[in-house]
Length: 499
Image (cartoon, rainbow, N blue to C red; front, side):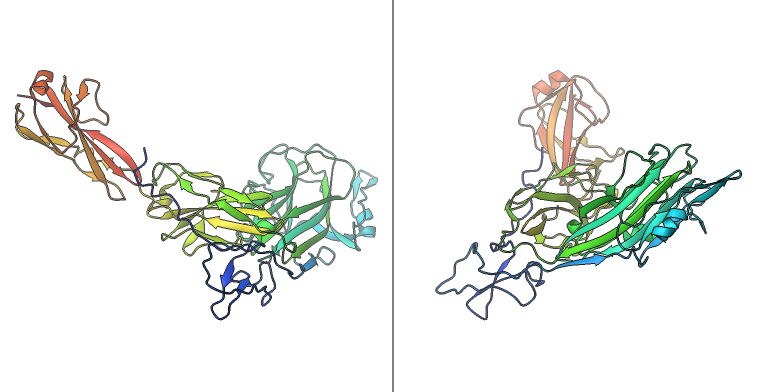
């Protein structure tokens, strides 16, 4: 059972809300209410705001208003440089298949036009020249082509993408893949001595992963999101279009990667028409996300190895929730919220891989605090909520084997015995409870009450006066229960014979 006061419950933060889902601030210098976030620009251009005249005494707990006008959204589209090869990089694995990068490849990702695409793959089989023509560009004059290789290969084409804060972002790209053999997923993007491994995938990865250069291993490494992964192959080429919403990553720099592995030597691919569309505000006069029941962190204890659970809360004006994230923090803090995905409370860092509703603290969390973040997104924008930090994460109480609880005093009916709790270790402060037992057999200190013992009702202090019933049973023990915010542990003393 959890402690009487739950140290994990987050605080409730009250925030004024406008009809477009941004904080409403009372301007002290004039009788008006200004709508707009503190960073000026999430839903409105900096310096543009609505004013509502206010007279008389103000006793405001919430504000609901319908703005008469809001600036129109600004939409911009950026070509990401396939036509000119601007901003793109390539990497390929050495033929050893050991994850290291090769120095050169004659069949790497190459910029081609319609003419060169039709003649670039020419091979001689004996005295017979063979030509594998490729289709022309989807748009413009050029595109990236991954030529057919007669040798095993693992190759990647990638570039970084800056996603502005306070925007929605949509990525569009086209690709084609041709293979004369079936796709087979071995679980790694590497030659790695695997007999059959043919894959093509489009991934969003972290900048740190791309900078490391360790492309050829598990596709889960550095992965933010898989965008495309064709499961069936074709011996012909057709441009395939895909559009994905990247608004979850607003304010971050991510890396788009087209990745291929083929140890059969019969795959080619193309990439074209890669564009990014950004919108600096959501639709006019649409309510932003509203939280009617805040997310909380629950758990029996705040301890290493004890599972914690974050709740989604209750939302309105959203189409979906944004995936959870747990954070490790160096200091305690109140619940907070933000409209920018990349905004994190001071002293907190995201825990890699901790993106589910549940999280079990590990040794690295001991001596730190934890937070849970959940978000919601809809036509009126996005909102991220951070719970209040948990109490300090600790370790469950441990009774030192060499110093268990003991019973002291004269072991005769009518005499008072005193329990010594023994030596315990734990990160948070411990509290102790006692329970005395009369037993019919002796024995050393143990971690659970033996079946030969019977609880003595009401005997819950550190001292106990022996009764005739104890003499009849023959032995006495005391159980010590040590409790902290990190857990609870019991230890039972060795049995003492009543004289």
